[in-house]
Length: 595
Image (tube, rainbow, N blue to C red):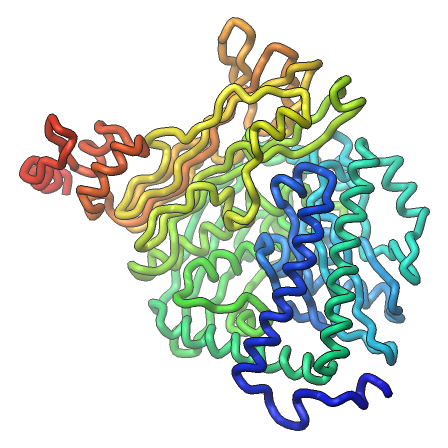
């Protein structure tokens, strides 16, 4: 009996609400199993500690269907484009195939995100879905030991291995030529090999589970589900957009000066909400051309960053898939720093810095259209506390390379809630984990001297931006190289609707005598044994006037040391008595003066 002969749940009728809900959860569960596989089998700390990976499911016609707890910057756009590239380069897909993809010119985010694509082929040889497992690499073969080469003038200087949907398995067997090439180029080959197997295993788990689901309910049922789920998601999106404020807003922001972008990067985001037609448009075309550095956005990251700002701003719970995307129009142009790069433009840092500025700009623009919508700006990254460490020591038995996640920037304040403290940045939406200090010290020749939030570093407002983080660490055996690309040293995360900006980032080297030496915001800093690197991450922006914040909440903020008494008086207009309680009369007078 063939697959098409099997009884289908559809039987010439649409699925009901219960069937839709069950199949949606079945799809989510498949992606969750993929994620669990990657988390538990990844060899590098960037996977098994920080969880810098994503798993999703794409239809045969390359529409994003199901995402489970993935980093949004990885998959909102790009998974579909990578699956399309796989089909373009390999028109005759077979069961047992697997492909490695990280090309930013063919739907990849940036070269450090190695993506495993596995086509799901039914018993009749028909391509039904594509499983996608994307895993950030501790080392991707760059010319310097970091996966974020901010100063690379082009992809050649960047040095990463580029795989435009290259076949890595046929009939479930590895293509050893690819494996040997990677092991020769990557500084920690066995670590990469473990992560390669983890991502491949995750994609194969997804394939196995989806094959079982197709056999259980019928492939026609799954196709019907996808069609109806997209339509349902679009309906929810229409309803959400119609509740938003109508209008158009142009937002300006600026990325700090960097090698290859010595004057900084002025970024313009044009946001339009058309409530009558339930369409949101984001125009990024009026921006500089691609620059000779690694900050240029891939098309996937440019589109995803705009989508992030939109989905952070719309009311209600709307699924992120191809259906809801139908109500969004994005305008990019070729050879633009926030647009569509052409080879050999470097996109080494495409998932973070400039992408964060775009996403933050979109949600700030929507916030300015109407109170109760949008968000302030989340903090910029990548400070040294989440840099890539490298070196060689007896403890690690030779070379080590890994990205650490010791201290994020603060999240953005929302219309009615304070920021998520450990958001990280807008692109990972708080889904990556902070490292355990003890585990990092156990795995690498390093000591963490301190880590804590910084008082008064979050933007003030009716709701507060998240605080920045102080972190100090250094090597215990030999020199350590720390690669980072820290935005926000000059232009902080902006507040909205009267909220203030968060604190700026900064970074230093501390010598054995305790003296601090200023470090550049983009560097491969050499930290000798006995020295430490001191990192201050950015704070997030505030939302609304600080004078609108509940005075008793301000008193609690002082008690928790999020803000100082000086800030409470000068910014929030709140005065405490000698018992630490709000002096209501004095506060009303002070707020009247400030307003």
